[in-house]
Amino acid sequence: MKRSIVVLLFFLISLNAYAQTDSAKTSNWTIKGIVGFNLNQTSFTNWAKGGDNAFAFSLVGDFNADYASDGWKFTNYLKLNWGRSKIGVDETKVTDNEFVLENLLAKNVGWVFKPYFSNTIRTQLVAGYDYAEEPAVEVAAFFDPGYVTQELGLIYDAPEWFQTRLGLGFKHSITNKFNDASDDKETPDIEKYKFDAGIQSVTEASFGIVENVVYNTKLSLFGRFKDFAWWDVYWDNKFVAKINNFMNVNLDVSVVYNRDETIETQVKEAFQLGFSFAIF
Image (cartoon, rainbow, N blue to C red):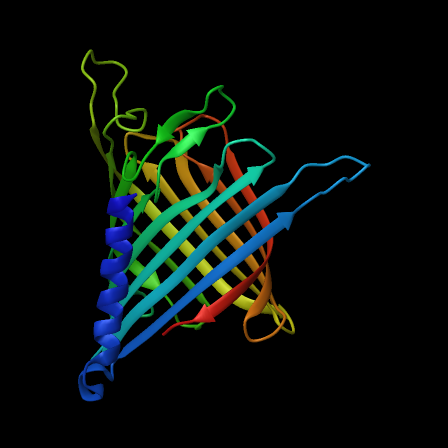
């Protein structure tokens, strides 16, 4: 938890430093930061029809720091999700837990497709638990497992609302205590690090469906050279219906397939009424 807070504070301080430097030096930078707070609460007193008190909240953050100059484009994106819930006398449970940091450098060389290099980090902000067990069992922690992926290839981003890229991918799976993502079951030793090379594809789009409703989608695929029979899949979908300048309704649906973690397809869905504020 302490490490995740340090990472978040470092990023926020860095963005604030960019914002406060001389305008002549930052004219090529576009910095955006949006934080959101979603809350659900139910309370009962002498309620004859039954029920139980419930409280849930989630904090979300989307931060961008983008640079464009002389044919170069450098984009940086940080996504943070953290949520907890409590029902009755049960223990407080983690309901959302995500950290994604992406950096991408592209060069306009006069082609339809631009050469690019990117680096992506995926992990959890805090410890994660399997609540199906009694008591709950810890199954993940900050950067345990953590995934770092580098890409080198070509990107197409002519319309502002659409972007797709394809290239060589290099995936690093890093663990500490929870070694399913990195351990080679065919060896007697427990490996805490695994390297895979393959093909990486990322496609994303953002556009309005109807007035005040925006759809954002991002599909990431990674196939290993040693076995193209299965691919890692990360597909994030978000519908945002804007009520006013600071209130909105969100529907988030994420689909993940990562056989290093589980052979089952993972699905997360969240429907929330929340508050969002632009801080940059």
